[in-house]
Image 1 (spheres, protein in one colour):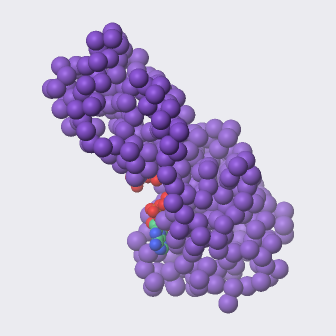
Image 2: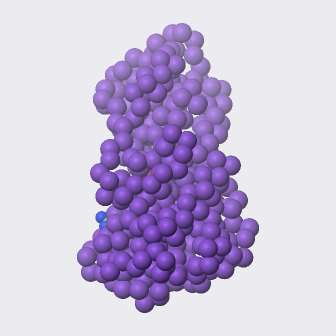
Length: 327
Ligand code: ADP
Ligand code: F6P
């Protein structure tokens, strides 16, 4: 049986899946809001893996001092196969019970929400917070870490563009996002890329890219930036083919994990902080199996089943503007 809200004494917090800048601000907000509400707080290290291995520590307010400005996650994170199994989920719920954790805040993406959904079904009050650089959670317009990641990628792409222009090259720059193209779309617009390849939209017609590079050369453009989303990938072989077809020297740069690190932006710190507080408020108000979301400038929350069933698509208008501005 799920405990009644007033009975919640101890709130656990974990980060799961890929880390994201701003996760520490969210942890800090969960810890301090819970303590201010008279709850005990337990930090669970390394996501569900740490939960299953009982890597659980008591948290006091000072444990989260001097963390809001830091990248990564002070709790550590992991991907954990065992949590995907019924046995693992039952073990995790039993460990929560053993440690008196009757409310659990899970900071992560859709996969982490699925784990929280299973734990809620086993009697642990859970709240999910959107923590991923990929912006690929359907119920929310904002995910913790996205803003820092796109700013990091944007600055890196500007630098690649400098050298690309000097050498009059074509540069294919691959950005993260798993199967989603949000980082690619935002950087494509913000960096003024000539081509933006999104998994949701790309038709794999390389001839169009080749024609575009040749046409831009004829117009006198000295660089050609192609932002390629990780979900499409193969940037190095693409560069080889494009160079052979166009005669324009072409290089591939895969930005990789640098996009996940670094001090979080103000926006990531701010939203992570209010979302962390909101998650604890939900638990204290007797809510469970909910995820926190940001929509139309406001915080809101959804049932996890509902949130996981939602679909998210690239905004058509933004995509059209990106194409139009790159011509
Ligand atoms: P994200 O949370 O960023 O989407 P993952 O998809 O890797 O990242 O999920 C993080 C972790 O959440 C997984 O390693 C696993 O432990 C747990 N998880 C993912 N999917 C499920 C599932 N269907 N049921 C239970 N736990 C899951
Ligand atoms: O979900 C965040 C993310 O950085 C994705 O953009 C990327 O596909 C994935 O994680 C990489 O995961 P890992 O760090 O396990 O290689």
